Image 1 (cartoon, rainbow, N blue to C red):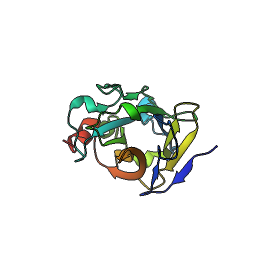
Image 2 (image 1 turned 90 degrees about the horizontal axis):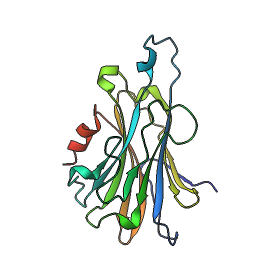
Image 3 (image 1 turned 30 degrees about the vertical axis):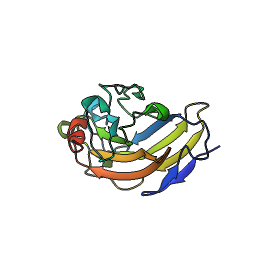
Image 4 (image 1 turned 90 degrees about the vertical axis):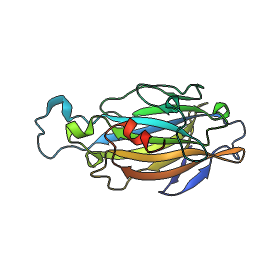
Length: 197
C-alpha cells in the first residue's frame, strides 16, 4: 500500500491511528541530473548528498553535539536515532540514505527530529541542488516496510547547498510528520547545525 503524498507545508499524524507504531525509517532519495555537456571533472562530478537528523528541543535548539546524527556520528547518545550509512553518488533506485527512529525511545527533552540533506564539499566542488533531481523524503514502518507518507521535493533548489526536508515532531502523546522543503546555504552539516544552537 502506498503512503500518503504530502505537499510543502502539510503535516500528518504518524502514530495516531497506527497503534503500536514506534519504529520508523526515514528514507531519502535523489538522482544526479544528467549533464548536457561533459563536465571533464571525473569522479568529483558526483554530487555527494548527506542526510542528517537534528534532535531539537521544544525551543528548536540543538542541546548537545550527540543530538546531531550524520555520516560521522551515526547514532544519537540514546540510540533512538540511527543513520544507516553514507551513499556517495545517489545512483540507483530506492532510498539513497536512511535514518531509523525509535519514536518510543526518543528522550523526553527532544521535541522534534529535523531531517536535512546537504551537499558534501559543495563550495570546493562548485555544486548545488540544481544538480539534483527527483529528491524525496518518506517515512516507513520499520516493521514490514510499509510506506506511511512521502513528500517529493519538487521546488527549484538551484543555488542552495542544503535542504531542510521534513521533521518528525511530538503532538501531545503522538508523533506527526511535517513536509518542510526549505532551501538553505550551508557548506557543511556543522554550519547548518550551528543555526540551531
